[in-house]
Length: 414
Image 1: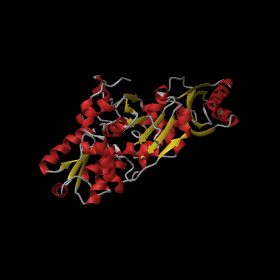
Image 2: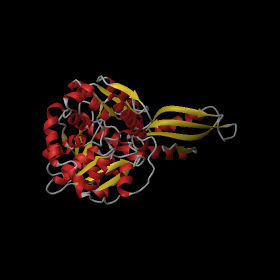
Image 3: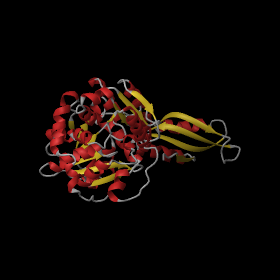
Image 4: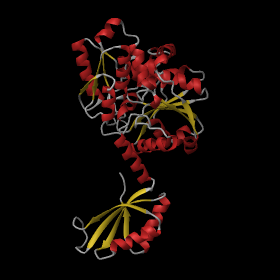
């Protein structure tokens, strides 16, 4: 954590009046998503948490706001030529959806590893898709080349004052619904959302605290603001905010309106995604869960505050979501794999199963290992996947197995 240096000139790049004008402009064509109190998450963190459900937009992300605000201000000639955007998915869908509504031809450049669900959803809006590069930055560079060649207007995912003003409408709605909010917690990728929300927050009387959140694997804005050189690479659950190079406009605004930037681990992101599904019954992608992840990782930072958390998107691959939920079950002790050393003789596995039955633990799968083992030829290792009620139940099972003379160790997750 670090205190950010203020820049008075940055607040003039986007003003509260710009955001209010954007709110009027986009209001007829976007969903006014709810801002709701989460009693359970509030109890868990010691803060009063209000969640802004931007995952309920038609394209399941806030990105529609900025994209639409930009598109509505294009002149007739620019609309006829068409637009191009680069995005890992949510901005792509927002641009494609609203461009199609307005009759504007649209091309989207997406990184090659973009989740299938985001590619297919973007295509469904009639966009021409080009897969290029490993990161959003690579896709954006390619989009600029195409824009120059074909005279298309770039709808930048974050570094554009019209896009930033559109994203700031999130904060306008939150404060209309819950005037008591004294802190915003907002994910940071390129910085468009937090720049818009921060502009609103600092124009408020009294000013509202603004906390940004980045994935530990991609601390690009943290580096830019604080002069650090932490590495930006790796496979993050929050691919929507996996940006290596933040915007120049957003960097200036963030230096003016953001009070702190927190970095969250992959484990915290996974926990937040799982909790939002289990507690709030809402599907949120990794980037969308970053705000809650920060509150879980740094509870002392938010204790006693009234916090507005932006759930900025819900486009997560279903297979990935299933994996996250299973890993959460494993970390909470409700799903476990135990490695048990046995003697290779009749009834050995049956005797182990009796202990599971006595402790009322459900066996899901059994893996026998005789060959690839450091044990003697007459020994074997058995991995048993099982389902328990909680961590305490799992620990009782392990004690019961040890009491019967078995060597048992849990197979831990990373």
